[in-house]
Amino acid sequence: MALSQKTMLLISLFFLISPSLSAKENKYLNNTTFSLSFPLTTSQLSLSPNTSKPLHHASLISNSKRIPRLTSYNHKLSFKYSMAPIVSLPIGTPPQTQQMVLDTGSQLSWIQCHKKTPQSKPPPPPMASFDPSLSSTFSVLPCTHPICKPRVPDFTLPTTCDQNKLCHYSYFYADGTLAEGNLVREKFTFSPSVSTPPLILGCAKDTSDSQGILGMNRGRVSFASEAKITKFSYCIPARPAQTGSNLPTGTFYLGNNPNSAGFRYVDMLTFDPSQRMPNLDPLAYTVVMLGIRIGGKKLSILPSVFRHDPSGAGQTMIDSGSEFTYFVDEAYTKVREEIVRLVGPRLKQGYVYAGVADMCFDGHDVEIGRLIGDMVFEFEKGVEIVTPKEQILADVGGGVRCVAIGQSSRLGAASNIIGNFHQQNQWVEFDLSNRRVGFGRADCSRSV
Image (cartoon, rainbow, N blue to C red; front, side, top):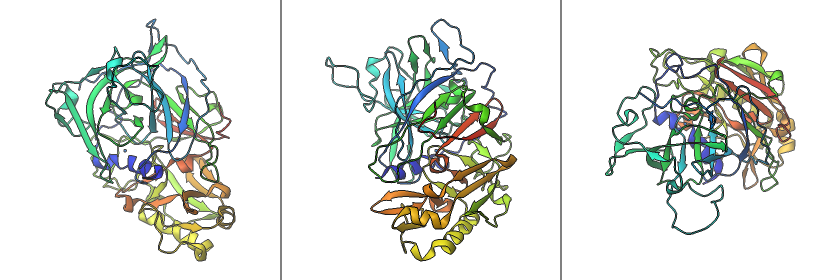
């Protein structure tokens, strides 16, 4: 399946796994900050747009047992963006480079694990699966580990005890794709002097995906939580106008971003543990959205449409693992009505891309974009995400281009989800210690 299908499936993980830990319980943050910069590679996956104790509370440490404060490493490599951000991370001892979807909508991080046939050869390339037998720091979680027991507050991933008395997890994506394996501990080694202690992640053995997932939400076993990351940011470049073109580059920071002085911030909404709402994801990066403008026209959508109701439906989250943006019915209907008013005769009749997006066209995207105009998402404190008319449409193949907005209900979701398509040429910073999300316009193909 197409990458866009996979990336949209990533967000559906939340609706299969219902965490319940609030920010008030999630006190893993401290005053120590550590900064790293990685090449963020965004490339084609292979899935359909539906794309989420005594735990080991780790912190980034150096071999000298001294944690650098406000240290910045600028590691610049070309990075490619097609439909999902893929970051290459060095895992294990010695490190094996693994490619993982940078996903702010997921908690569990997991990698592909396969033991290779013994033979003398150079280290595996980034796309290769992880070989646990080659790492001296790899360990598995036994069934007796607390996380393998039911009702861990914010981690209700289905776990069982396998025949080897190891903690086994499994889940299905919305399209029926199975991801399963064992929960393990492994360290991320960024340089000879800087690494994390072993962190909990999944070691997947039965999945068709070539990349893993770097879970970056607010859950206690996300990479951000376990590694005690207090701040991270990324800059996703504009995708090329034509598929098959050379793909652009961008940057992912763990820690302080040297560009942050120009960012504008909105509050990150947090939820009390007593607020158990069936449609709410309390671990998502939830923000206050106020409205939408298309071609300079403010759509008549009440701000309450973008806020959670008593059931939790309607929250607005920032999700790097979803390609498209999704709106609940009230907002989606207004967006579609305006698109129909502007370019209705040009719509591809009866066409629904991947079952979720029906504002699609045959023809040249520049002309259609000019007729639609810029699209603006309005947030509190005057913060805006602007998608210029030249980038309003996503090339989904076969000469078809779609407004990159889907209907949440078609996805089986009840939330407003700001996907990575509408985060292009934006710095997006998640300041966890101050509970805020920052945005800053940039040419992400040139940002450092």
